[in-house]
Picture 1 (cartoon, one colour):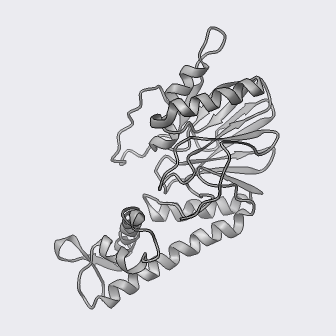
Picture 2 (cartoon, rainbow, N blue to C red; picture 1 turned 180 degrees about the vertical axis):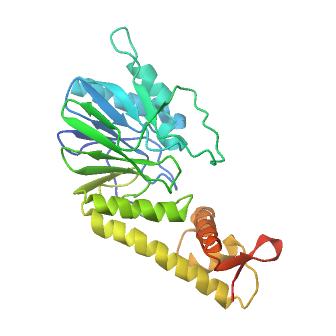
Picture 3 (cartoon, helix red, strand yellow; picture 1 turned 90 degrees about the horizontal axis):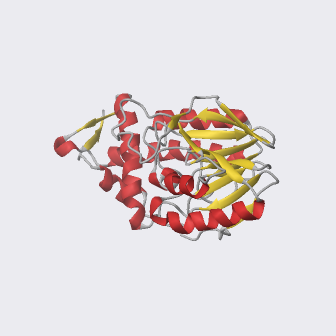
Length: 289
């Protein structure tokens, strides 16, 4: 998979600097995009990279802060995944000094039904939908957009009508999700915001958001149709998620098949709720006649 080459640091506007998390990979693309937002002596950082590459990232972040002659007052985390919140503790350590307190960490709470416990080596303050944060030159408003995770948040930069989309929308490829129904609802919500530009959690800037969002919605619809066709074509033979992946993801690199199988499972769970499929023997799937 060929990806757009991104510099480690990019000044996207007078208010926004993108700093890569120094953690490129199959799932993280060029690395996690973190964003320094504001124009004054104290700014907001959106996401913090991964703890495994945090020393490299914080060194890069320090150089940007020194060049801008600024510090960080708040860390806004788009969701709980380790490549977004993992570097928060090291960023706090970097900022904290006799003259600067450690920046506060903020994140939406996860659903009580979420299987992953809220366990972080830092204090995390709870965000609320539509909550706003202001620093010199920038006002950010929280938009709860579940689906990728239950606690996922996008952020709108009011001055530029820009959306920081976290992992709900990526600059390249499509996103994984936990709940398809919630994810599709969040995509529709984002479409309705009519933002001029999207700054994603991974990949390059999305300059024309509406076609990208509509493509994501249509892509999920086509995936659902493909899954149904595979199950219909199996002539009653139950199939598991990876077997379905083998039929419809043949053009996808095999190292991405496990992630594709997770997406297929979430499609199937949606279809199960709609009474369109059922589980056969060995917990495999069959189409309902």
